[in-house]
Image (tube, rainbow, N blue to C red; front, side):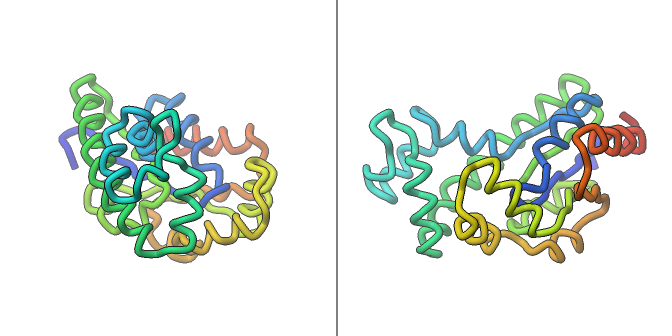
Length: 203
């Protein structure tokens, strides 16, 4: 653990409410390093990953605007495990590098708690040793499916395919040092639980 700095890993399956909790923790005084946001920046037009993506997957992986074609790549990695590994080999090291830069900037700015919002924290296997504690946002699979279908307009089959590629609920809970069960809560109730947790973290 860095001197005086708490490093909290935040994770949860798609539709768990993890992003909502990240925003609430930021509101309580934590710096948030958002791995998904970093990955999106890397794959926008001019992003650091675009050149290698084009080399590995061809120009068809890039939109006319110069960004990664997210829909095309999503379909590809669903059907081709080798392609998923190739994509991760491009994106993950760049995300780690930028996460480290953002952490160093937060420390330099005087933040005492840095939350790493990492959707695939459990799956990656490389994050745990960099963190002091892992916070898991938990809910049932049925709730995840219903939320994502409502939010994204995706079919049940699409959501279930994504879930199949993520760690199971049991695996995430086994990795948790802290847990918030976001099942049947209103946004206000969830925010109250986050505030209580923040007090325990010294925020």
